[in-house]
Length: 397
Image 1: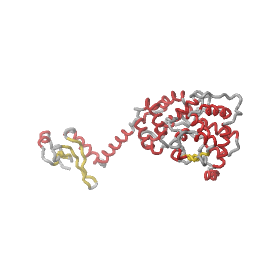
Image 2 (image 1 turned 90 degrees about the horizontal axis):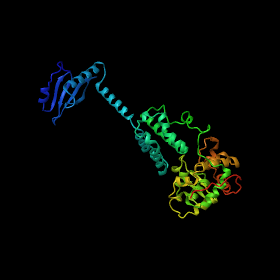
Image 3 (image 1 turned 180 degrees about the vertical axis):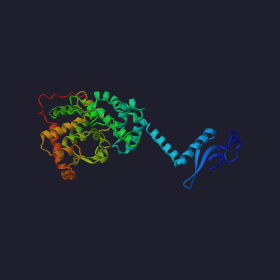
Image 4 (image 1 turned 45 degrees about the vertical axis):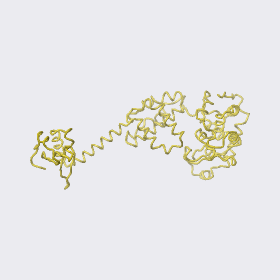
């Protein structure tokens, strides 16, 4: 560094027009480019290496301010620190601070871009976005993701939970996953997720001491309900009856393709990418399930093309039950009225079996036993010995 400092003046600053670096002393220079632009630079040597650090353009940083910045840099060097390292660290800190100011909507969009490829199908992706846009974004859209707390999450969930607990449960799970993603990205703390269920929100949403789950029709009332479906004879009624007979999920049925179905072998093979557990699932088809498929007008594309979840939901609306709840009806019936092994019933529902002793069931998927199970289930659904008190639930057209 030069021994003299404060060598420049305002007059001199204006007079320098040729390309070069003009010293003010103490490592501070006015640099004039070949285009005539002027900027401040600070030159210094550290650990045997020469460094240049920009201090800003002349039209923004005055001579007095440039001298202050140069003096601060010299003080850092005197303290054994590198001014450029400090500058980079400050920039990184600023970037992290800005990142943490991301809104919930920005995080949701980023999460969907990252996870969209792993989501099972277009229907599932659209449901994700629709749920967020309808219920979460109106309140959370512009809220910084690091400011979302439990009271705010409750304000989003409570109105939905009172009307449709099933939808609210899905909404809560999606908010939880977005906030978890934000935590991993550094946008908020990873240690606290205000949308988590266990040991947290489960204490808030209770009815008579029990959490609201998918409402299942008691199995002794099912034959009467199925009779109503057969009499309705609409595409939606056929789709719902097929869903019940196969104990499948709604999305699996609505997304089914004729290429997955072998009517000769009475087998429906659902590819892994359409399954919740991402594992291929084989569904033995009962005679009635095959009869429903054979009654459909087309053998190309999707058997139940044009239908939506709402189409089937309308058939049970007002009864207090849900389409998904019929899977619980099947499980209750199989567990209470049959002697089929637990593993066979769980495989019929496409549930994973964690018990290592059940490896043989995994290998063969208990297909023969499941054929008999689904045939028995279909016979029960068509039976007429339902409980005397069971009433036929009126079906909407």
